[in-house]
Length: 255
Image 1 (cartoon, rainbow, N blue to C red):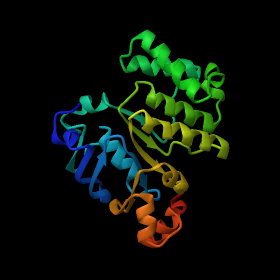
Image 2: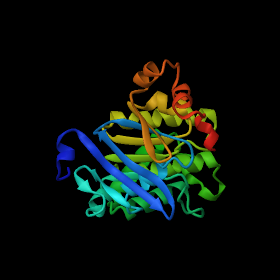
Image 3: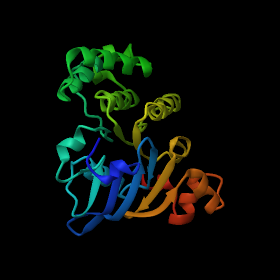
């Protein structure tokens, strides 16, 4: 995996002084982070904090204004195709074909990743069974609820069995029961040795799932640590209180 020291020292993602400007707006402002291989990493902040912009740069969808980042030793700018071969992305907006069934969508995205047909069939069967989605997967997605669409989007991100998974607000639109089930599904990814970067407005989600949490606001990193360490440092019973203490607002205010 990889060709740089980032992959050798246990850090699968290394971000150095990353900046992204849009005209007169600085969406990401000098962000530096290291994310370890096999880590479940929570990325917290209100709307407009720079979370999605950061993920878009790491995935090769946006070019940084300044700064660098490596994924598994590969530079996100110079070696974008190698990076894309290692990652799976669940974006905020569901990207599916409404007149195809869930199964057909999964198989299509598997083929777009260059997977062979037998491997696609086996992988898709595993994913839908693990998610309890076998019946829903037979229906056309145009009739899916928002929560079902998010579940399918998550499976599409995993269809190529990537080493690194970016989940951008993966449980938005789900009811409480589906959200809890998805938490278990996401938590199991770590048991498979995957590195997961999770952005969410549901702060209890990050607290329950994350090994470490980064809190960003106005494009800058303002706190980093395990949920337990951050709560102890700020004498708080939960991460929501930590966020309120250091930003002066609740995380859901950005919605």
